[in-house]
Image 1 (cartoon, protein in one colour):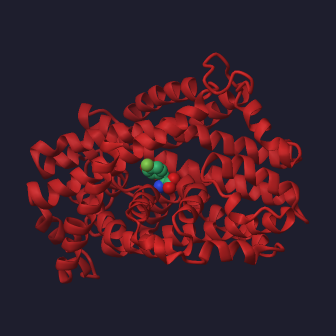
Image 2 (image 1 turned 120 degrees about the vertical axis):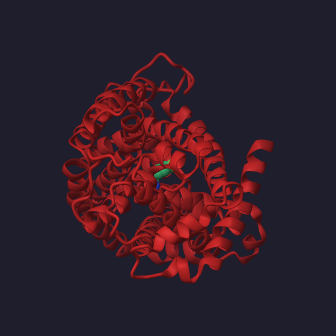
Image 3 (image 1 turned 90 degrees about the vertical axis):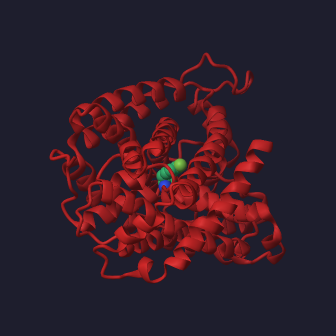
Amino acid sequence: MADATRENWGTRLGFILAAVGSAVGLGNIWRFPGVAYENGGGAFLVPYLVALLTAGIPLLIMEFTIGRKYRASAPLAWRKLSKGAEFIGWWQTIIASVIAVYYAAIVAWAAWYTWFSIDQSWGSADETGGFLFDFLGADMATGLFDFSGYSQQVLWGMVAVWLIVGVVIVAGVRKGIERFNKIFMPLLIVMFGVMVVQALTLEGAATGLNAFFTPEWSELSNADVWIAAYGQIFFSLSIGFGIMITYASYLKKKNDITTSALTVGFANSSFELLAGIGVFSVLGFMAVQSGTPVDEQVSSGVGLAFVAFPAIINQLPFAPALFGILFFLSLTFAGLTSLISIVQVPAAAIKDRFGVSQKAAAGVVWAVLAVISVSLFSANNGLFMLDSTDAYINAFGIAGAGFTSILVVFWIVRKWPVIVENANSSSTFQLVKRRKDLWFGALGVVTVLILGVTLYQSVQA
Ligand code: PFF
């Protein structure tokens, strides 16, 4: 039954900006450089590109098609595809909700660090770690496992982040999500571009870039490197969590799928490479200053963005405040546009399940997630919980839900021809139809095998 109250994107550009806004997030700026470096530097780019072409873009096409064809949130769309598949959508909805709860915390930290950048409040280079602990309300003496302390700063930061998210999703798809992305995505790209240019002018930038781009070919025979590349593509492109199904459900039938998927896939990876170039130029500068080789400074995630970067910003030869503001504000904006897309998954699911309005569903989902998020992650054990949630998301989210959804479409209910048909129904660029053998091989064989192995390994571990 058609849902007459369902919104549409105002323009195709609006949809693309929102999808790129979802894809470009914390995963691009702080996860990618570290993961790439740990997995063979330049040689990682080969598995990474293979993952983009065999899993990223084909799955984006699949999720866009499912969303546009069934015009429904993840659970309802899967149910329309096949009755027994509804559980995949709920699984994705739960994973998205878990991600939202911790993602918001990091966005709040990034927002505060934008403010700290103005006078580098984090102190001297060897004080940045201690500063982060204090900021998080953690007691160095008792360690991270003390559940009693709260950080007022984190608390209010998170409240502010959730208020922004609430205003945007309650306003709806066109007036909220589309409008927000149309303002903040161009801004993000300009700011980030300026930051990377500033990074490239630093003495030692070439040293860092060498470390990043020098291939270690022997790593190519390492299965873990391949698994890391597929994991990065899933995380970075927001696929496998119902996010892209949800966003595509607001497309019009005439909107093109394959060109959108290619645009979003390549835009996201370009941004990611740019982030790698920026981060490694900065690490190279630091290596030249301190004599510590680049590879001893790289850590992904929290350490890189909130400990190493502030220490480096202190020593920049010119405009350290500007650099800090550009970096952390980019992280904040990139994170916000992604967080909004993640929260829209449960909001849309509840709307469809209970037949209420977007406003009501978004309001309820927002309130529940915001309260859980703020109360869990403004406590000082947030840092520890972040690590374990991340591992859990990789195992049960990326490998589990991704694997199951492809298995169901290609091998169990075998509805993949329906997707081939619909991916092309309006496409000027009949890519999937003409090369359905390639599309089938990429997802139905290669990706499913790699995800199967990943899943097997994480269950064993
Ligand atoms: N793709 C976004 C990022 O790279 O940060 C948002 C995101 C989606 C993060 C899904 C994590 C995730 F599991």
